[in-house]
Amino acid sequence: MELLQVADAVAREKNIDKEHVLEAMEEAIKKAGRSKYGHEHDIRARIDRKTGEIQLTRYLEVVETVENEALQIDLAKAKRKNPAAKVGDFIVDPLPPIDFGRIAAQTAKQVIVQKVREAERERQFNEYKDRMGEIVNGLVKRVEYGNVTVDLGRAEGVLRRDESLPREHFKTGDRVRAYIYDVRREQRGPQIFLSRTHPMFMAGLFKQEVPEIYDGIIEIKAVARDPGSRAKIAVISKDSSIDPVGACVGMRGSRVQAVVGELQGEKIDIIPWNRDPATFVVNALAPAEVAKVVLDEENGKIEVVVPDDQLSLAIGRRGQNVRLASMLTGWDIDIMTEKEESDRRQEEFRTRSQLFMEALDVDDVIAHLLVAEGFTSVEEIAFVDLDELTAIDAFDEDVAAELQNRAQAFLEEQNAKLEEKRRALGVDDDVAAMEALTPAMLVKLGENGVKTLDDLADLAGDELSEIVGKDALSVDDANAVIMAARAHWFADGEAGAAGQAAGETPAQPQG
Image 1 (cartoon, rainbow, N blue to C red):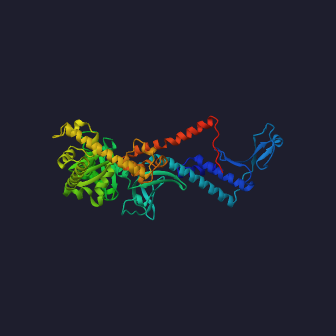
Image 2 (cartoon, rainbow, N blue to C red):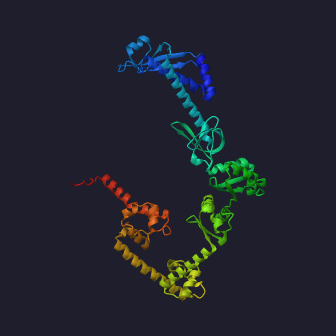
Image 3 (cartoon, one colour):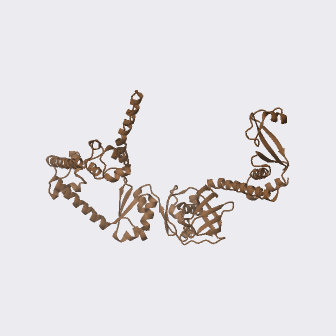
């Protein structure tokens, strides 16, 4: 009974299943038995779960021909011990109890400690693997090179230096609050990784401080942090009568101050989330005022125009404000002043006007009219519906038709030059036959050494897009071109397989 009492005490102390402890003891007794009777024997130990009595036995497998006397017994000998024995059965011989010597006892203790530790680690892993995303409280157990081991009560967590806030120092015994961002099985047992810099740590703190977030009335849509310095959090209310920003700030700022205090004074901008990207970006750039927003949805970019005196505020110290706004919204934000935007628009107007004057052989008045109506390239003029040109004031049908003819003639001349250059660069006709590739793209491919279908097929989508220009060919379109270029590989493979199926003999290499 003494063994059962010990197992019970260990199980309670370590908070693991008593059965695991008894299995560890059986393993230890088995190991001691093998040390005494020989490691080659199949010795097994069992502790009676009711009486605590130890049963030590040796197992011998019944076989026709004995190859290993330590593990096997022939059928004739087995029948003397048990007349009902047959091949495949085991003969079980009881062994006398072991008198544990000092070394055997030490070995047994090591085995038990090891097994109990493994069971404890498994319990820890199972308990914490589903708690990722929680905020936990613990006490600092030790600090090594800035990495903090935190006692969580029934487990230990690791708060690495890079997951702590800047200028934050812990001493043994300090109370610490952190976010569980990962739980992994490692050689040393389960590792519970903690963080105080993770964006969701701040979201969790707001959930604890703001009852409306806990109840689901207010939802946190996005968080962006520059840990220890500044952060932005976007919130939305599902109840139109509740102001999400006011609820998060609290009476006289009490709620937000509680979070700021936990984050060592990190400044927090609370922003109303909006479904419209432009409005959301304007909100995210607060406290700066925005004059105009231009969206480029295809490239995920957004141009923001601010008054000249707001530029430094919009960008923030070391670009912090615009960087956080970009992280929060998921848009690539490009900020410019009203003067910069005006200068750029004038330069674009001048450049396009010059292009039309040279390509279409027209005066500056007609060129300016075309640019003012939103035409950006000669291709647009060449292939636009004639009605769109005649809709411009001072353009009748004859003028519109003449402009279109000149645009088409200019493009044909350009394409002829590009075609000549493509041939000079040695780009194959097979590559030129691909519909998605324009003459200008073919020249760029030739200049970059891509001259055959195989050269093109060997590229990745982003490489092809980079060579011909991302504005000219998106990565998705580039992938489609590459797959079309690879089609002949599969066709060759199928032709070879069909030939062999028809009984053709594959050509043998010569030499």
